[in-house]
Length: 616
Image 1: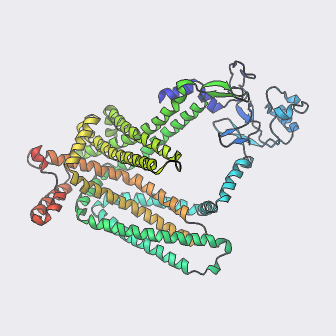
Image 2 (image 1 turned 90 degrees about the vertical axis):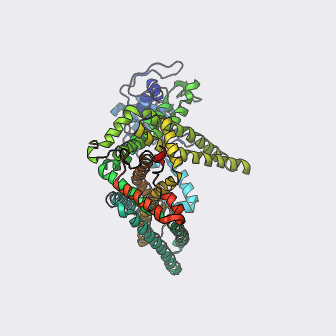
Image 3 (image 1 turned 30 degrees about the vertical axis):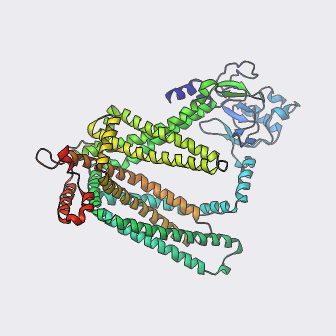
């Protein structure tokens, strides 16, 4: 990645991208070397710092280019120039010649070639683009062809037109609801941190009430709107009203099905609530002692944004790097020849690998901090900032571990993306057998990627505990997970499910508020797209906040499994676990004795893994 960026900068691509270049290969704002067999090359453009297009409105939508001669000029025309006399006066006044270099300003109105060598009239008022020194028309109506194509597409699709109009009409409500989802996520994080003992019951009750209330409100709105007289609706709004009625029916039926499924799942998992409460209480203590964990998604997002900006800038550099060649019109373009023209393929691989690497660094940082908390008996002896201590260990010892783990994910993700691209290109052309094979391969790779992600996260926890390399840690984590498969399902699944219920609570609350506000607005706009935008944003915000809590629960579980495997609570082999988990272990042992033969199945699920200590 460094070589690709250095190559693009060293070959002048950075200067061509930022300063711009004319149709003859001259970079604006500097002296240029003469190019062989290229007229008007090698000019001194020290005082001409802006790129000006003779016909900026001539867009090639397919190749995403401006089909126009480009010149380096001293200033962009800030006002519209209607005649060649105005162009000549602008050149004499500002010292900025807008016609080709072969034509002097004094010849603008007298030469017979002026119409072909000067900009298309009228010359629109333009302003330089910040940082990129291109003169761009200030009036977007200049791009008439592009706008016409877009408007034609939208007007031909009446449904799309109504969706877009619905979003534009409800933009204030959408922004307000997005802010509401952020506030609800922060409130839920505070609840998790301070009242984790009752969190499970609170979330369960609220989800039950929210799902019942949301379903009831949807059916009520559907019945109300169905009974409303159609004569009161204007003819042009009748179609929109029918679309909203149909959407409400779909929402109500979907909410009913979702509520029934949710109740069935909660009924099956009710016996494992006590274990989840104990685990969540310890996780709440972790956030009390390590409050900086809450900000980990922000730092990760910031690092990802910085990398993506670097990646995009390097990609733009690659687009202007290479050697100068003349196209069919005799103008200069820069193209890379030989093996180097495939550098952007590796650049795409780097995007996936380094993005996964940054996410893996977050997992390793969180794992290191939580492991430090769990295996420190006296919490008063914790480091001043366990998060920074974990980052320090990551940088000094474990960068290779996260690099290897993220590379394995990349090796799985790239073939899946290639198959998805092939499937999209062959859509409607392949036979049923080929389509089934492609979808099966994509599904299998997706499942493999998810399994490897989970194994990697536990491998990072094992690395934080034992300071072993990636392969050894992955093997140790895999053995622990296999030995305690039932406990993995009982602890990890229930914990993740309760956090999922928290996400559902935030999405349902935001969606219900959106339905009420959109219904109160009384504008006959389609609700589908605004409501989908709001619910997706609410889920993403809730996921960013609760994913850290989910990660802490997973790390605590592996620590708990290792602790109970090598320790049994006897002198010299004392548990490291929190008192709440100790109480759960004792209660589980009592439940096993009282259950007898009738409770063998449940006793096995709640067994605290202490039996593994005798064989350790």
